[in-house]
Structure formats: C-alpha cells, structure tokens
Amino acid sequence: MKHVVIVGGGFTGIKAASELGNRKDIRVTLIDRKNYHLFQPLLYQVAMSALGPSDIAEPLRNMLANYRNVTVFKGNVENISLDEKVVHTDFGNISYDYLILACGVKHHYFGNEVWEEHAPGLKTIAQATEIRRRVMEAYEAAERTADPVERKKLLTFVIVGGGPTGVELAGSIGEMSRFTLSRFYKHIDPKLTRIFIVEAAPRILGTFSPQLASKATRALEQLGVQVWTSSMVTNVDPNGVQIGNERIEASTVLWAAGVRAIGLGRKMGVETDRSGRILVEEDLSLPGRPEVFVGGDQAHFSHHLEEPLPGMAPVALQQGRSIGRNIVSDLRGKPRKVFRYKDKGQMATIGRNKAIVEVGNLKFDGALAWLTWLVVHIYYLTTFRHRVFVLMQWGWSYFMFGHGARLIVNKEWRFYPDKQACASTGAQESGG
Image (cartoon, rainbow, N blue to C red; front, side, top):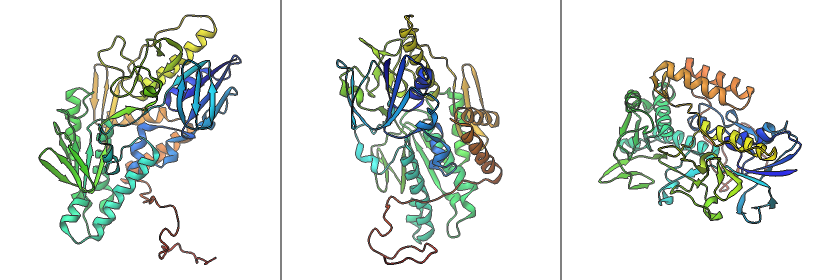
C-alpha cells in the first residue's frame, strides 16, 4: 500500500482525502493542528455574533469516518525531510510515499507583528471570538462612561484592509449597530457608531470590477461606513491607527490587510514567493519532487495566468480533487493531468440584501446577488445539519433584524483569577 500524508485539514486536504478514500492500494494520514475543518468564508459571521463556532466547523474525524483507509492525527508538523520522505511532527516522524501540503495562511503584518496585539486578524475561531469580545466590550464600556471623548473613541471601529473580509466585517458592524444594538442600550446611541475601512490601494475590492466595487462602496456608506482609499497605515497602537499625518482614535482595530503562507516552505528550503507560497508545477507538484504536491493557499500557481490563483475555497477544492486524481493515475500507470482552474467567479456581501457577484462577464448586485451569495455558502457548508441550522439562523436574523448570542467571553479561564469577589452565578458557592 502506498502511504499518502496530507498536512492540513482545509478544503484542499479534505477534498484530496475524499478522492483517495476507501482505496485498497492507498492508506492516508491527515495531520492538522486542529481537530476540525473550518468553513472560513463565514468566519466573520462568528465574529459578529450572527453564527456560533459550531455552525461553521465540523470535526475532521466525523467528516472522514466513512473512509476506512484514512487516519486523522491532531498535531503540529515541524519540518519535512524531502530526501528521506519523512514528515517531522511533535508526536513523532511519519514516512510517506506521497505528500500533500495544504497548510493554509496566516495574517501578514508586513514586518510589524507587534500590531497583532492591537489589531487581530480573522483566520481562526479563537480570533473570531476575540474580535466579538472586543466589539461587544467597546459598546459595554461606552454605555458606562460619561466622558464624551472616550465614548466617541469606544464607538469608533477601524478595519485595515478593503478586501472581501474587511468589507464584510465593516458591513456587519454597520448593520448590527443600526438595526440590532440600538434597541438594547439606554445611555448611548449605537447608530452613532463610526466605522472606517482603511485601504492602501486606490479602491476597495481590487479583484472585482470597478463598477461593482463602486456599488459596494455606496452600500457601505449607506450603513455609515467611511471608506479611506490610498491610505497606508503607518502605526497601530491601543488607542487607534496612524495614517501618515492623520490619525483615527479608536478602541477597536481589526486587521484584514494581507496574508502569508505558513512558513513550512521556507523551512523545507524550496522556492517560495514573497508571501511564502510554494511555487508548483502545472500538476501542482513540487519542482523536481513529483511525489510532493502543494495546494490551496500554500500554493503559488501561475501557469498560463496573468496573476497567481487567489486563496479562495473553489480554488482549494478543485486543487484537492486534481491532486487526489493524479495520485490515483500514478498508481494505475496513467499520465497525470495538468491543473486548470474553472473560474466559479467571486462574491462579497455587505449586509442585508446587499452583495456583489461577478462570474466572468456577468456582474450584478443587490438582493439577487445577496440571495446568490446565501445559496452558494449554504451549499458549500460541510453537512446537512450545518446547512439547516445556518439557514434557520439567517432566516431569524433577516426577519427579526437580530444577531445571535452576543456573549462576551473573556480570555481568563479561572473562576477566581485574582481571588476577588466572584460574579453572581445564581447558585450558592461553597468554600470547599
């Protein structure tokens, strides 16, 4: 039996594993730092309290339970010895006949990693819940303070980066502050919330057509979002952001300005681009290493293209399928097929009945685009249970202008962190 090791349980890894599942001539080992697959396109909905983490995540073992030849390990891959064909993990070494790298990306602060503490990104559930905590804590603090200057800062939110994630975050905060939170606070008016998108490029949503990007800008402005383009952030601190000679005082700054691949490629000593993505051949294999494949956000694929393929779910899914099928072709003695991406288009949502969709020459916005976005995202959710729950949650939010449980969960896990008086729990506590 040939041993295929897959590093990463994202869209590429899951799709490749399913292509190789239940084959008698292959055994598959999938390794991931987490024990679940995350549907990242809806992660911002968790950050904005519209969905819960379990609505967009599914345990990897559940997803792959029907494949008898697939084993899942939770652990970290520390390095890879290409000559020895060995994956070095924090729980031991694993040899392979074929290797699939699909580790994903992390946020890129362009050499200013100290900004992360003040401006969290949005790639994990932990980051999503931290963003939700910061956003809701800002409203709670604004409700308590009597200082108008401090209140203004607390009700100011800055999103650095005008891509789909930044637009979706800004639109969600705008919609939540105007249609949901305004009913629940007595001393502040959440409708006075100030929201800024700060983008270094000349316009937001640079991968979309200028016409759709302009429509998205107008939709954001209707929600009270101010869009600052051609504006480079030069510093981020606990009290706001510096943009050249201008400054925005804000208690909450969110980062959506760029990503870079996990550093495994550089550790392996293979050729990477400036973002750390590994350069691959037309069949997604590593140059000179036909037994090693790279897919998803970690792959730099630019063959016959003006620009490398973007890090999107449709790209990752198609690459995972192609890699799995090429491994099967190898075992059957058949030639491999080169990878050709079938463009499924792109879309972004701004808020209720507001979205943009671009598929080839077809471009549209408004309620139809929002409905298209909804159907596509429901379709790609992993299980039937998730689809039903998310559809019910969105239906409730749509008709009731509601956002789910706006729970604030602090970082501190101990019940008595400083041996101070505990909060009321509704039950008598014993000293034992």
